Length: 387
Image (tube, rainbow, N blue to C red):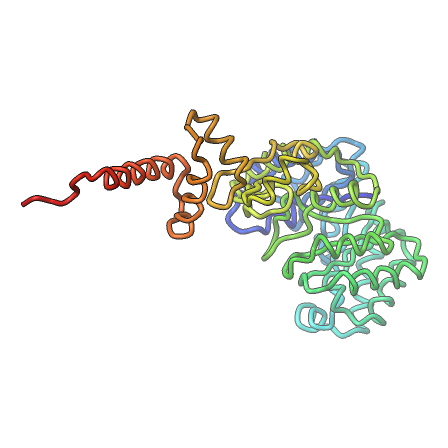
């Protein structure tokens, strides 16, 4: 399975992250540690872009394919083609919207003129650049007849990959999988690539559906960053491919956590605590049933062990819903007498339903205080206030 990272291009559309050229160079070094096959490094529409991308190309080893997303503007195509001398595997990816909405509102064309417009620029690109890919924006909303007409045009030229993006992130695994299955059955000479957005939380699932139905490449970002709800998360798909589908990927799973943490720090991006695989909550087991199961066998409530992806061991915090064994272990490790642990635990569970964020240490002190007060009353002490 070929992986194309688009953290440096699509990922940079994430709001409230650092995006300077220097930051992108640092992120590139982390991406290269992942052993990924292909990296979409940006777009080239002016000489500022050109000079930056020239620098980036100098950092990319010969075995990695750098990709530049390119609009259907003759100026952009000509400028991007000049970067080819700086990396022999440089690929120009032409961006062409294929839904009727985009064709009418963005290109101000109709189906007939749009396909002529596309072929004109595709022909120009193939004369200037040795490696050409195509990205058909909003493919999941395109008319299938028009979409296949565009792919028939691609099939007449030397195109490596055609990307079928779910630009709105609104597709489902069934629909996206069937689209790949249908187009794969046509036996085009080029390969198909999946590119999904996460607006309905289905980017990873849709990408897997595409792979199961003939996609040879998937595109994504580390941490799933990107516009709106983000992109397909590279790390999630790689773990599923390796652990569930037995499809090898070039990534070493143990490197995933260190790479993601480093990128997160460089971008000053705050991940969701529920983010699969890397969120702060993912390897936390708080309920008593789960804690008891984990003490018996770590596989009880974990499919992926944190060390498999280079992470720290799971934790079992103490709370009012914790396992009795975990609470007693805490009492023992902290030198607290738990000969009456049953009473303490029941007291802890009762109070936790009324008051948030009380530690077990605070609970034991409160328990001892109340026990002392009750004991004093039982011994006949006078607790009345004398004025």
